Every structure is written in C-alpha cells, then in structure tokens.
Image (cartoon, rainbow, N blue to C red; front, top):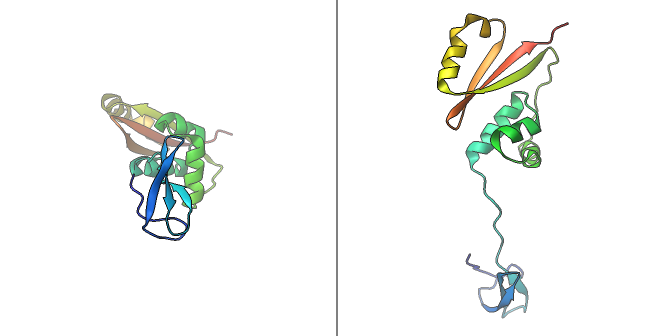
Length: 139
C-alpha cells in the first residue's frame, strides 16, 4: 500500500520511521506527525451484498442468511442499517425456503400442488437455486 500524503497536514514530504505491528510507519517532515498506511478491510463482492439484502426483504432472518451465504449476521445487520432497508410486515404469510439443484428444481415445478396457492421466487445461489415460498399461516 502506498501512502501519498500526511493525514494530518496533507504534506507530501515524509520519511519512513520504522515498522509498528508489521506495518510501515512514516514521519511527516513538515508537522512531525507519525502515521502508518491505511489498513484495508476485507472486501465482500457486491453480489453477496445484493443477495443478502434481497433475502432479507424476502423475510429470511439474519442467521438464516448467514447460514446460506456464509456471511456474518452482524455484517448483514450493518448493511441493512447502512442502506436503510425496511421490510414490509405482513403476519398472514411466512416464507419457507429450500436449496435445490437444477434437476430437483424442475421436478419440484412439475408437480402442480407445489405452486398452487402460494407465491414462489427462485434465485440463483452459486451452482444451486434457492426457492422461497410464501404460505399462509394455518388457523
């Protein structure tokens, strides 16, 4: 990682000043400020951000999304807060989901009783497919 300017004064004149916690340390010649290069966090692909938010809107819980995508439920909560996602509340329906491969998916849709009387969404999940189905709560 290349440091281009002092974060304190913005000067471009600085020298190396040792290593702290395995990171290069610099000293600004102008203001005598010590600083290290910015640490880059783990970057998650936008595909997973979109998929996690989509699944959240479909009614899945944070922990269910964590198990499916392998991304921390805390990270998903932070994305929901960051993008100000509001999920509509409807107590008459509840989502159920299944993860199927392509042959299982075609077999599922070939049976008419599986698609009658409920909403279904199919979304790609790597080499498999996730089927989300809304069913009415039974009284």
